[in-house]
Amino acid sequence: MDTEHVTLELPANLHEQLQETDVVSYLEQLVTDAYEGERWLKNLNDLRQSIKDGGGFQLGDTQEEINERLRQIRQEIFEEDYAHLYR
Image 1 (cartoon, helix red, strand yellow):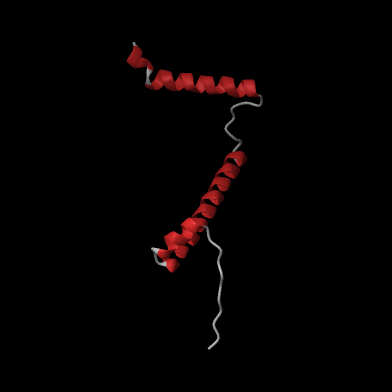
Image 2 (cartoon, helix red, strand yellow; image 1 turned 120 degrees about the vertical axis):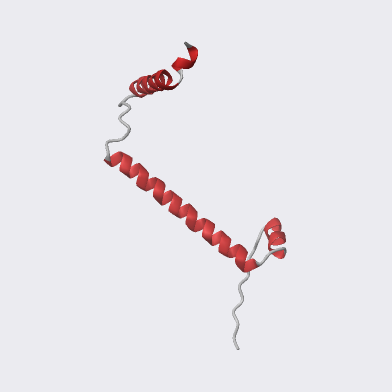
């Protein structure tokens, strides 16, 4: 019966962790985490594209316009949700 061997070079701390746990389960978790990260990144890119396709946030074209619009939004939120607490 032929067997294949795989040699891995690991940092010492990772090697110690693998000695204390089931290697297959650990590798499965690493692969699962990697796939979840890729899926999260794809969802983020999809959201960005959706915002872009929908015309963006429409905050303004220049830094000054964006800052002014954000100030305006912040003031509106304050007036709606918090101003009554200070009167």
